[in-house]
Amino acid sequence: MKKQFKPILASTLALWMLTGCYNQPGLVQDESYDRTKTGAAAGALAGSIIGFNTGGHDAKSAVIGGLLGAALGGGIGYSMDTQANDIAKALGTGVNNDPLAPLDPNNQIIVSKTPTHVKIIFRDPMMFASNSAVLQHSAHAKVEKVGTLLANYPQTVVGVAGFTDTDGSYEYNEKLSKERAYSVADLLANNGRPFVKGCSYDKAVAPNNSARNKALNRRVEVYLYANRNAMSDPCR
Image (cartoon, rainbow, N blue to C red; front, side, top):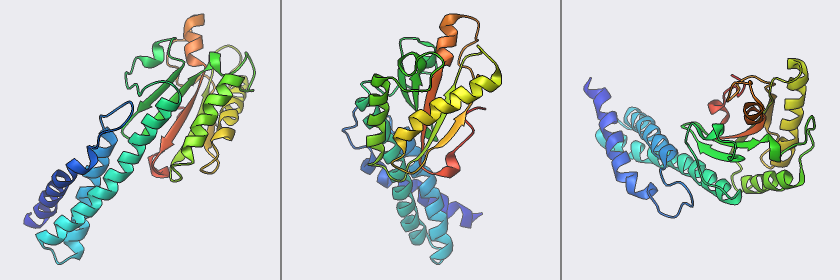
């Protein structure tokens, strides 16, 4: 039991020592650093355990390992936090983690952060004409801005998913949603080909029982992950 406690104690110390390093000012929109804290905590724990087990089972090795692990984990989180703010600024908005934000028709673009990824929602009215997968001019420019910014973060893994309302068959909407996702993905290929899915009318944000709600459901979502292991099925 003692042996297990030492690396945990060391990881706590390491994270405490590094807290000041990652609470830097200057992020444009969102200064919560949730991902940074999570990444540093996980990295500190893993690093301290590795250091403890490979460095002679002493507290000093555990602390050193914890510091290195926290720095690495926190660095990944800081990068994702920075991306969220950079993208929000480029798109003329802020980071909005309000779970009700997708239900507001005035929010044509929503940039949010979760514990595993950054998500960008592009609402359909500004993106495509009815039954079309060709990006409208203003939408093309905004998606292109995101693609340009991603060139600064070559490790980021990108996923793109299209969503429709329930007008038409599931199969038709699946094809249309995938084509729309590909139109966006083509402009985000600086980090390699994004993962693309057409979700048809699965995972609606609102019931498809009115024109207003159907407009809310027609969207393309872009997901930015630190690595592939963090990816999940956007249609579920």
